[in-house]
Length: 220
Length: 216
Image 1 (spheres, one colour):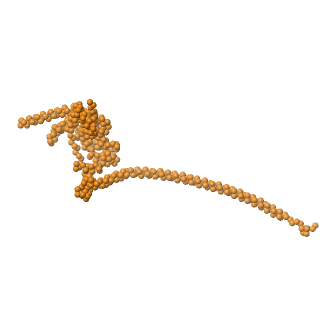
Image 2: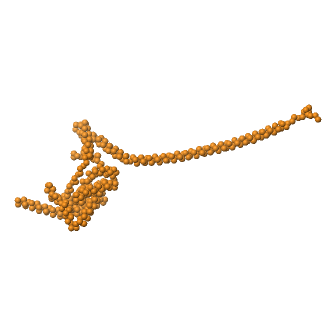
Image 3: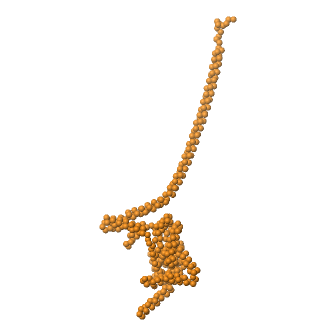
């Protein structure tokens, strides 16, 4: 609560994203552009991670998204919301990346060895607090999400993780709000179907492991 | 039983309904096992999704300048608030502090607006000047055209007047000449008459004086 007055004071002086983008568009204002990057790179990075499932690649995609914003600054329509335009640019980059990586997988390794290698590469390491189970569950969700069709994954990521309203998602994707909601319902249904058996196996494994540990400690 | 559409359930799950709609769906959920089952599945999926956490992106080194700027602005506002608060009362109240800060904020806003206005003017002024220049040129041309027309009309009027004068002068001349001719003719006639009278006078011989008449 202590920061509230200061925050409202700040907002008095702050310019909106649209004003900042207008400055970038008309005056090539670097400070305004830096402000937009600071404001949005976190969320765009999250979107790219969730969409591609690859944190390292997501960093490049985030940078690419802002480079594209600057390169296409003259195309920005000042009557639209800046965020809608930015989400759309980032999403398109994610789609391109997914298509590229799919082609790479198909051409490089028809037996799926690369996928296994990739999965090993991004497999979670136990944190300092030893929260391995939690991380393993997270990894399963990541893999399950990658199995969803793009259209469903997009809506799910934007509504559930990025917390956009259905109407905002509809504006980004340029589809009716009802379509967004029905895709969301389908996405949740499919996620439940994919995750249930995966998580059941995981839970069983961890139960067996903890039972083994208990027996060892008892024998000692 | 009429089941709500799954689109409506999505709005319900993500809290995008007004309270009336929300209550309606919640009431349905309490009595409909089918919908309850579906919603439970969606809720389970949502819980599972939360297990995947993405580490926050490491913030880049923020340039010092904006921070200093903010610190300076905060310091000014704070100092003004505290100063005026102390002057007015020992226990500062929010309304007074706000009243004290307001002119400062207004001042800064005004400066920023003025700056924007200046920039805008700087950009627009050449265009406006060019436009007004063009307008001036057009007006001048129009004016020159009007002057030319007026001048032509005037000179035509002058020519007309001159030619009227000329014709009157000619008429006068003609009538004068006629008069002179008449005078000349009359004078001529008079002269002839006089001449004749003179001749008659010369021819006149006194009747013969018998005393003077030659004697033959």
